[in-house]
Length: 153
Image (spheres, helix red, strand yellow):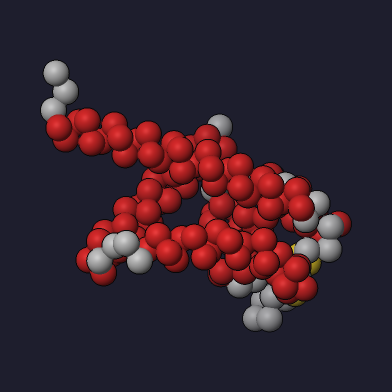
């Protein structure tokens, strides 16, 4: 018979799978509304949160292989949602920046999700929210590491 801890761990794994599936489906629907793929919208999310990045930095942040990122950037430019710009301190380097007009158009699709998550957060104490933040951030790092392993073969 499984211990209570093992049972809880299995429930965390299942809840994580359910969240992952819901997130992929949501972001696929969001992307489709904008004529993009989920990968393209998540790359734009990185650019929006972190600011302009080099292709190498985008590869590092996303966990995608550099060759995949080059094609991704080409697609984002063709769709006019991102562009390559000269690096301000190093003329040999190029940055990729998000087209801010896309952000204005895309923000309303997140309104219901953000409102629902804000309401959900109200159920938890500040200490519980700190634990949730820690778990989610650590989970993201584990998943990014697994992505790097998958894409580096």
